[in-house]
Length: 116
Image (cartoon, rainbow, N blue to C red):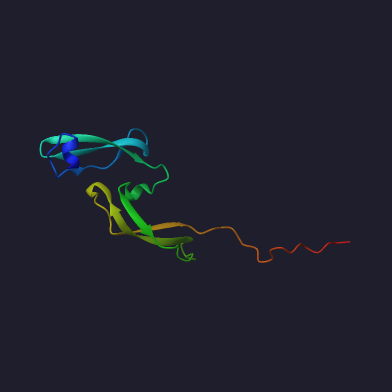
């Protein structure tokens, strides 16, 4: 039904990745082919996106794990939730980030003693 609106009878479209117009994020396009037809669709890659996974792979991430004393980073995994445009996506991905260097004070709300 939807394919006939745009003048195409083809049902087996193969879509490539979203290619930004400039740099590595923002507005761009993706190319699709079906038999001897080809099309371009507008697309967008968010600039804060995890680029190594691709904009067409959506993951559900668990909470961050504890900080590793050896590496100084913490890790979490994500399970594939949706692959858009038949994208080739990893089923499970792992991300790391540096541990927080902030030292949380346990003496909240207490002021130092006044010197007289």
